[in-house]
Length: 137
Image 1: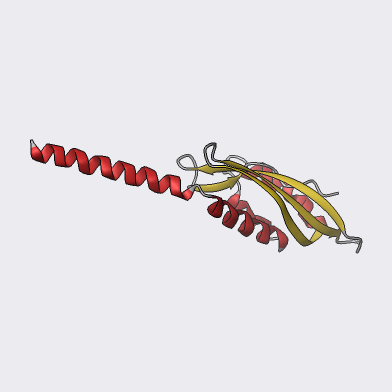
Image 2: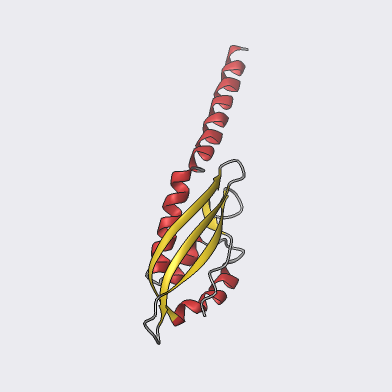
């Protein structure tokens, strides 16, 4: 009797610990780290590497649409706003990219509204981009 109660208590503690650990990963800091890493790869035009952060379901279409990066040189980016919801496991990130066409030197700015979602089971765990790249001219 005491042993079965002890096993039940241990099982409950393990479930709470595991659930608590998963919930702790869905933090603003983990989102910020992921977004920063993604933006750096985009800044250096490492699109195939940046696609690691894209939802598996969207990756083929993302890579197809990302061909616009071939025509431009990103010179800077700024994260303008972040709307983070731990409860919904979603975030919206507004990013401005400064760029110029490879055939010119005029600096232009494009605004990219990115949607991010935290995946726990259907994809590799972590924050994944669920929107497409900006449409460069």
